[in-house]
Length: 496
Image (cartoon, rainbow, N blue to C red; front, side):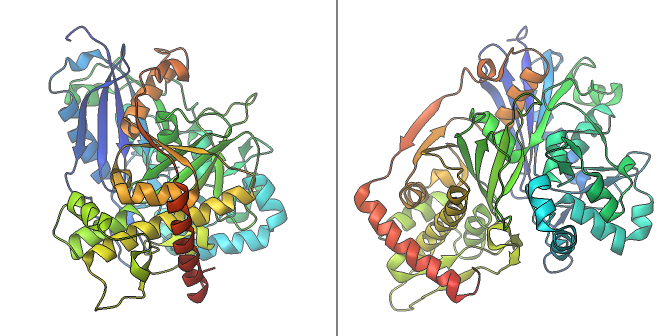
């Protein structure tokens, strides 16, 4: 073991930081870590705001790294990869210090800024060039800072995404990627470069953007100070970074057109790969550059995101039940499909893209004090999340982006038999569950970027499928009826 080489993967989430130490030869993890043990706090000084201190991520990143390295020779870690929460805005000054808390992915303050940009620039320009509305993404968040915090804006040296910030803390290099620029809606797809029209419209100096590195490439060695503090070698290289959803897709081997990945963390995602520049006219789902996009090989990821998924389950556990998730899942399974008429609308975590960036609160509809119990509530919540996924899946299908099989890690919401059943039978897809996660994917991506592996397939040779779930006709019919009732509730609430 002492002579074995390793890869270290980091997953910088809004709930926690996770790390995985992967054996280079087998491609399998030998250590895992998470910090903190409970969800990190999200600051919400005003309604619709969501912020986190980047130093909080860095603190927990260091703890995770140290935990992972306890039983190995840390000098044998050859490369580090980083997956991170998408669309966050981090601002640093010339001393590479954070200027304010990060405005993270579920913050809604810039919705109208993005909507105005879409109107002013015109959908006929935005959609074919950005494949999105500027919406509530990183560029619009930066405009909010320019408008409302001009003194901070004047001090900005570089803007970053969360993963860029962690990579900078490790290497001292302020870099980003084309995929990161696309997720911030700075990227012009036809031009394959930063959009001058957008930066001119918002009044941004493009020098605020970091220099681009390739997703899979050596992006800097560890600084002497960080290597010493963490016990790592100064020859250890950061060689991969990607947003959490494209990184999750990589971990599952979802890199070719027609393949799709899902994730059920704080937010829920279906991420489909295509070789076309496709967009939804209402920007309810969003297209970004995928990790393996190249000038000679178009690969885009179409992201269907529902903000209120795992966070809803977490809220229920904290505020309705003091029980474990396992007990909540067991109670949910004791109730029949449709939750005896109880419907849960899960949109309570900021502006929902599939609702055209409406900020909707979660709703529980049809509650009968004489019929419904905790078990009905837990089942209705999990069904509501699956139904929200299906509503977005209908949008993807209308765009010509569809799949018969979705891959996911065997964790989070996918640990629940009720959710798995509702997901598969409502969406009429086969679900494959794999023994992997974002931190493992980031580690393997680092192996590709450092040249340790010759290709993505070689890096993923050890990927292990645990199980698969397929639709059952009789259950699919029941879920279809329940979904129609649920969707009608969206109409009644004027959400669609």
